[in-house]
Length: 430
Image 1 (cartoon, rainbow, N blue to C red):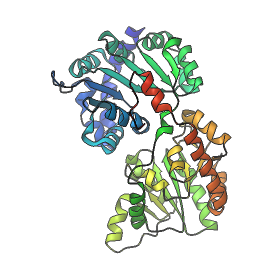
Image 2: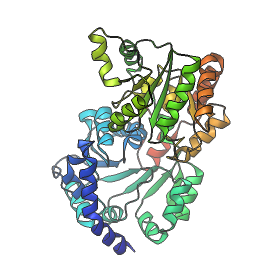
Image 3: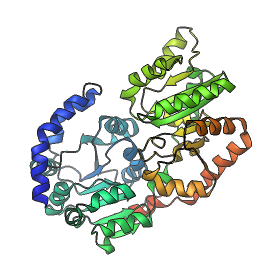
Image 4: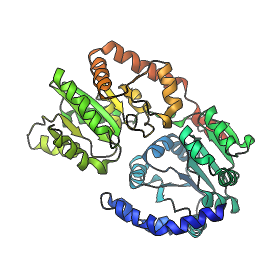
């Protein structure tokens, strides 16, 4: 079956190249380093230290991997670490979080010549793959070279499981290449076994997203942002939003403005390259709007920002905005995108609302809802009501945040278990 899969990939190669170039119109990063997607990377120094390779497809997976990456850097300060991603925003996040301590590249397309060239030039000591990235040719190539392969923080949503089950013979052979699978939850472990993973290679390690700590500069950056944003009387945040959600969020914001004219919505699309479209949508809806990236310049020039909506068009500031907004809606959950991580907001002291589409974080939201740590909304009317109630009721807001932070503390331990499963001794500080 892998031959059919590979033949289809070769047939789609021109389309993949065209799509890459098309996406580069709005996000030029897709047009850069394109040779890496064909496996063309500089070879490693034959006499150098061993290379650990970690793959995290995009921003969310890179952030989830951050505690593991930092632990590996402490365990093996002499080793080189490569992080591959599939998106320019993922690559930018690697640079933002780790700077020059790691090497980064795009993952090659899953074509035999590309992955074989990539692996031959880099000669990794092991490959660690985050979450749900299953690439048959890549996995077979590293196994043929005797490279240990670990699938960590592994998860399979119900939707992904149904899709993968249609190609079970291919997936069974692919999973046979994996040395160990560190699943997020028992449900994930059972789904991997049902796809053909050997039961003795699958273990439940927990979710690395519970291992995150706030950045060391959290307090100082929040203070700096207050100078940039001013002190709006009634701010709320919508983070990691998707197409189709912004219209609902603006409708909710209009309702809030009827009761509180000083309300300000900080709107952060999941992909910042969509910012121009989101700004235009806000203007068409009749809101006064500003871009986050231009606020400091405006304040330096002495002009005030009285925007009703501020569109966040840069990477790397969302956690700090969570620290400033009393209430936040987590995107991808009113549109059927599977939701995004709510834990960072709770750690930052922000009360969380979510829609019902949270399949990508089903286990996280299940424990948070059981603890009374999130507010569930079904539409823009419920969202406006929920935001207003949380904003006005400081006691309820604090109770939800405290419940969420207790859940996070109780669920820690995934990092140490993951390190043990991949054969590493946890460092003194995990």
